Image (cartoon, rainbow, N blue to C red; front, side):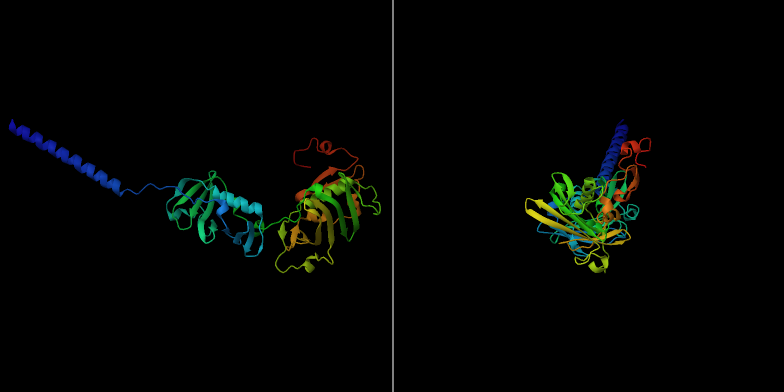
Length: 352
């Protein structure tokens, strides 16, 4: 009987020792386990950023800097920056929202497009202090892949924002040629090889200026339309290196065309003077007096701002005219014919 008790005691003891070993091994395994991987990205405030360098793959790297509250392109050229483009980029940096870890191994960087040759490299600084140094990569399943420069882990960031950084250099430059409210323009004069015409606004209607030779079939709405192009004129591009005012045909002494607008504002009356130059592949050269860049405006805008007398005349009854806003082409029926709604009746939306 005592022998049985001894056997039972030994079995219990062995069992207890087994449990102790199991618990010890479990604790050692937990101690050796890698810590949980946490998704993280830099946190910054856009107002703190004073320098921004953006290097998209296959495109020219651009450096922008804020001086006295104004953003400028500082490399590879010196130029005014597009405020909206910079504001958008800074806003996207401030809103970086990590939601998951996309990869923890370097071999995944290529397919997630966060390598040096595939990612958009963005560096944001406050003075000499680096606030963010990241590669922006692929857009997958509604979110964007991001990797900090010296990190192996790739983070999934909420939403789409690569577009705000993946730009050509010209898109970071200020492309505003003219921007003024329509009601601020009081007179406008067009001068080019076709002649010279001056118009004044009385109330809300445009008329020929006193002393001007009367235009046949003059249509005030045509002046209103051309002025509308002028007051919100944007460049598509900038003249290439080596193009001078003389070769572009935009010198003040001998431009191909000139538009002078008298405008009024709270600061007083002033003039906006625009010189139109030669036509080239993507439009017309243009220079605004007081601004240094030689702009390239669209072919549509250039041709409207180099009018002939016929551009201010009413459309002939039943005449078909071609309208090409922003490079598109539509055939519409001119004055005297059916209205646009009737002309488009029965046609697919968006097509002539």
